[in-house]
Figure 1 (cartoon, rainbow, N blue to C red):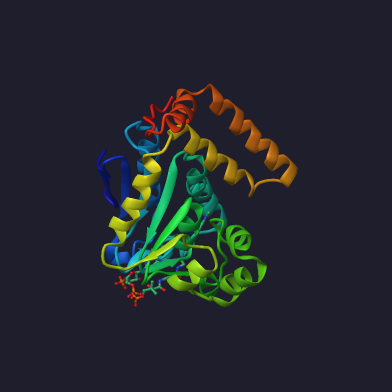
Figure 2 (cartoon, rainbow, N blue to C red):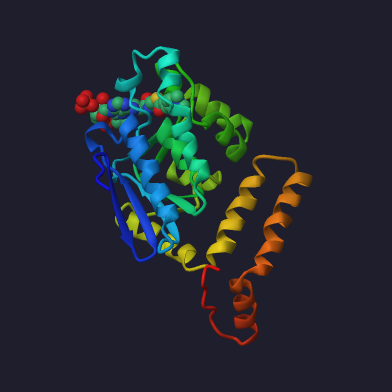
Length: 257
Ligand code: DAK
């Protein structure tokens, strides 16, 4: 597959997508959105890959949707371009996706990062929703995901008052999982992803799905969703292998079955 706005790479069992429009601070134009999700879906379907990373460059993870592309669009053009459906494709990815964020993660860039399962931030990462400064509001889930992740007041401040979070604040408030030096931030994210990629694949998939259920439903329904994912794992070879390996005091050998 030839892409024009992203680069793809596989390191051991980790698939990496690098957003590659540095001249536009990695702003998401339609092509980049399509290519990003095509690449993630291809990694998702590849059994040699256990986890994925999306990254940008040191200066910009992504500065949002491409303002120049949508500045003069009508509402029906915005809807007709299928942008909502495009952004929503992240929800269909079953393997773990980690955002490795350095520099700006603004607007759609911040929304994409928080749509991923976890965030590794470099010390220079800055997260923000500046849409209000150009006369709109977040449209790729920012109002909802930030409110769930950070609580109402800070989400309000980010969305209404263009408050940006530093990497240290993102860690403090639970938006980022780790903050690492800018130098080698991608290698740190790959090491983190490799740990996940080395785990029992079906259990990882069920675990991701179960945690995500917490954001969709009541506690009672969420607990049912958890059980729906828990019991079927007892039909997998990996569950038998994992528990047997524990008893035999050795490392398990996962099959993904
Ligand atoms: N779009 C287009 N071009 C961008 C851009 C963007 N978001 N961000 C930066 N660029 C371009 C700049 O125009 C400039 O291009 P040239 O002038 O060189 O041609 C180049 O990247 C370098 O940017 P700067 O010269 O501004 O660089 P600085 O270091 O001075 O500043 C910055 C970096 C990231 C702070 C600044 O560029 C900036 O504030 N960028 C805009 C950030 C922003 O407002 N982001 C929110 C965009 S709105 C939807 C779902 C979601 C969305 C839309 C629809 N649907 C479901 C329908 C999302 C909307 C958004 O994200």
